[in-house]
Image 1 (tube, rainbow, N blue to C red):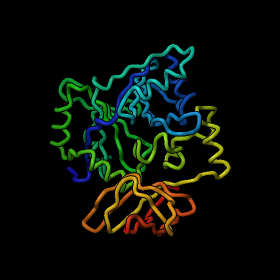
Image 2: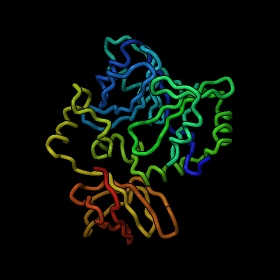
Image 3: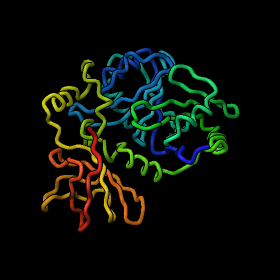
Length: 304
């Protein structure tokens, strides 16, 4: 159907079940985005931050029922988010379970992904788009926080092969993590443990759209609000291009002074390489040039 719709297995993520009637309210009080208005069969992405405003995890929260949530965690170990939520669960009657082995997680993305999904979906309920493959139910949910067509897909593990066979038969290309990385670089989509993580706050990582500045307190709220309200942002996420190759963790310099760091890289052609980087705000103008080990990188886009 379309050469620009892709499906990628997300083995690097983890899936957590969060149970109990107070589970959603607890996440509302702990994370950055507004979750309190979510209804059954709706979903939203939010961030779990530390008390210092650093990003611990990005969570895609799916409300299956009033007392049953599915959390897609960007961290490869479910224990990362389970331990953090447990740490702040005091009197709430909730429980958490690593259900990664019971489910498979994929992402469908690409220029024509919206059109592709229209041909796949058999039924919908709220944000949950459904299609039946073999005897298993596949849940497809659009991630509205992304600036490009991007769908999270949850399947029971038994139907993994059937899912792949089905989407390929109607024109979706199966790709690996390197392809997804290239797509993320091209579209300025931050990746866990590269553009965001315990080393960054949400605003410098290009994740400001996942912060609700009108909601009440959450972990790290005071720090993040201060950065936003008083213009204290130190770095920004930028897209860079270079004729020469660059590597993750390369230092971006101006006049011999480090002003940023390369966080992700991809090669588009022999003499065209792209990268994402975190750069000090005063150096983030489009067209600015940096030096890396004898190569030159130029900013072509930055996160507003």
